[in-house]
Length: 385
Ligand SMILES: Cc1cc2nc3c(=O)[nH]c(=O)nc-3n(C[C@H](O)[C@H](O)[C@H](O)COP(=O)(O)OP(=O)(O)OC[C@H]3O[C@@H](n4cnc5c(N)ncnc54)[C@H](O)[C@@H]3O)c2cc1C
Image 1: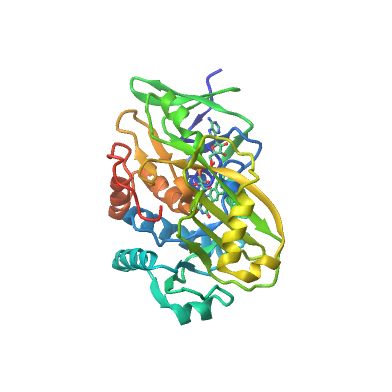
Image 2: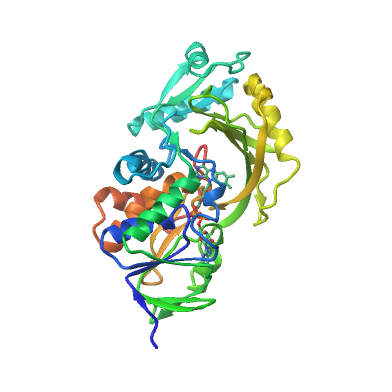
């Protein structure tokens, strides 16, 4: 019996694969999503803390995340699912001259792209963030249109919508290879069988590289691990997501916010990076971040931590995703290397990919795809990646 044929096969029901499948199916394409885990969003998606911002410095990421912000912020109104969207904004704090200088330099770039972000002086910041440590505080950037949502609730919502639009899912099934004939995709092989398609999207996150290699491609995606945690829920006391970019021993920066149900969710960027796929929590993470968070906001000493977890970033050398048609294998679409921002990029990436696959991309999409093209030099590194 010949394998069932789909217009598009998406590998990975994660931050990127789920919204991508929604937009493909909404446009009428028969779509199959295959994931090795038992349900939607069980890879890095559920490890994300839910921060969503358009305030990057690379134009492609700004544009993708602006589209994501529109999708996340309108989701409940359009589709009825509560995804815990909360528009609290982002604040990057400055306590030293060097952070003030680099944040203000970045601010000019971001304002140049039309983003709603401005500098708050010390007093304005203290008013916006009551309880923030005041000693040495110089001010910070504030982008009020950024926000947060629940990665678990949004993956459930994207999944529900995808099923409603006719997307088929195979969970607990691993794609072992992309099958090619005459230089073009003809299907995928899995540990349970095979499926035919002329278009395959690799949105396999931290596990994307072996799949790309099965097609004879080598996308430079290397997983590294990051830890996060959540406290008990309490009455709202914090509106924006706070980012402190002062490096310390073992960490480049850390950030936290109070999510809609009231818990404080927090995360650190380890330095040096912890390369690999180990997802077991460590005993060093919580003491390190707790100290820093209490230093920034002393009243956090009174809140109890509920749990911590560790997940993977699919990192690229320049901190930006790899997106678009392969120039070497016809029908292969890269949606790899989302780094630490795949949750916020996911819906924007999905919308662009659905236009790309249908050949109806806009001039702006083409600029995004050019910037994130698979054959670029991975030389530079984005500020605050
Ligand atoms: C602690 C932490 C905090 C984070 N916080 C944020 C945040 O606040 N905001 C943000 O935007 N991002 C955040 N991130 C990053 C974000 O989680 C990732 O960038 C994002 O989830 C990657 O999306 P993805 O779709 O590429 O991968 P995933 O969501 O991991 O999806 C990939 C899927 O592919 C499946 N898969 C892989 N290989 C195969 C195969 N061969 N066959 C079948 N299935 C396969 C996996 O099972 C997985 O479900 C955070 C990450 C961590 C670890």
